[in-house]
Image (cartoon, rainbow, N blue to C red; front, top):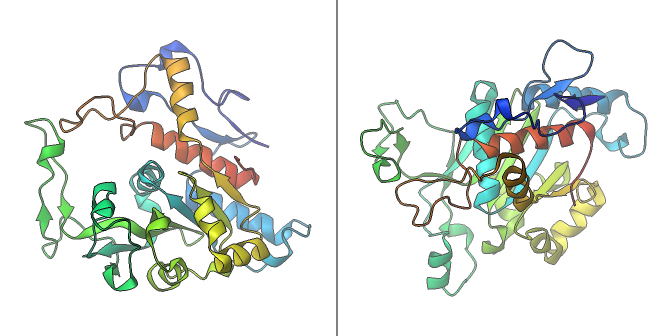
Length: 294
């Protein structure tokens, strides 16, 4: 039975492990009775696929021949942070990626209000391209200095790229699809199939926040597909506020972002590295144990 370090305790409360850095608050996922860690999405994916090959039960019959676990994350920027933590923490396992480039729309709340929340048409979306190397000469670097304190070395950002619509594959065994605010799109099915290269019938796990499960419920086609495939039964409704509550209780503070542009720090968004990395570990644990949060 896989458990977290410190046996049943999901959050180790020993004060000696807490410090002033957001990364000090850390979950570790381990497999009881094994010396090696379960590792990241590639390792988890392989273990779950092996389970689907051997485990009996009606919920596994249609998955016996699968070679890839497909996970869709549909929500707002808090869920985006989890997707980005996957990319940052497990970049060495990355085997495939697609990111939107040069979209012709503003996905911010203010941008959507300017268009009276009119849904995005397919023609407004950008092309999908692999994750670029910021150090590549073909990457036109955009400045991100405004987000950092003076004197700090800032990372490179390639102009035009965004993860508003994105795909990341790890180790050839798990693909994670992210879509920012699905409610913005006029045709969700077309975005999934033509931008994310995702066949909805092959999706295994749905992860929502910001009540985006209701967006799917209102889409008659996708709702029917996900219920028929079993993905709807495997949905997770992510409770971000619960993480903040637990950290405040156990650590005495919230490691929220305090970048120079944040007007009232700490921001509701977490520091990175920090809590989003713990959320990734918990999500991997849920996938590995076939457990859900609703």
